[in-house]
Length: 308
Image (tube, rainbow, N blue to C red):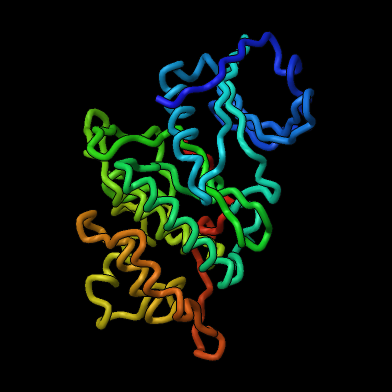
């Protein structure tokens, strides 16, 4: 376990000036603050004690510190802060917000920025996987930006990260980034964790930032868009691609197919995305006479709720 300095405070204001709140969720919130001693700006993640066990928080803190030496993983400072109501960790400030902040609904972000994200996220995930870890919560909210054009981005939030081979149970609810083997878990069922979980989420994330749409809401049989995609992939020569997939080049479709294999063992390694960076990923759908109008309005990116 990583070593860290321990601070027990009654209030955050004893050592830090809080500037504003950056985000909030079920487990706590993130604040923009600066140290009173040096004026250094930083991000503070406050985790509610009544919703998180100390051991769970210390595991996240230790992992975050240990992984900080990678250039595409956010730096977590070796300090553990305990207040009356929260466990707190401090991190370098992502000055341009999150990847979710720059995704334009039904548009996405420019292709060159998508590819810069693909490169850097795949490096960070491969670093985790090489150390026998699975992130488990890859989504645009957990990709932090040091600039709005994605020249430097950093993976964050290791609260769900666990070793490969861990038995995991069903989540409290399903989000679009969850792999089908996780979505299909019933209460009382368990899954042996593998990097393929992250590979699937990575594929969905690239789709979302390329298009501004989710490919589906849940990777389960009852989700119409997911089932249409699976049927098309099984017999691609017998039917046209689903509407949203018509905007992708042949090479991009192949790349997504490698990442979004329905069977976890058939998914390609994260770094396989490198093979497709020199090809165009999107085509001019208007020139091709392709209608990409989507009747499933819920697939636009605004509908996503935070994961548990």
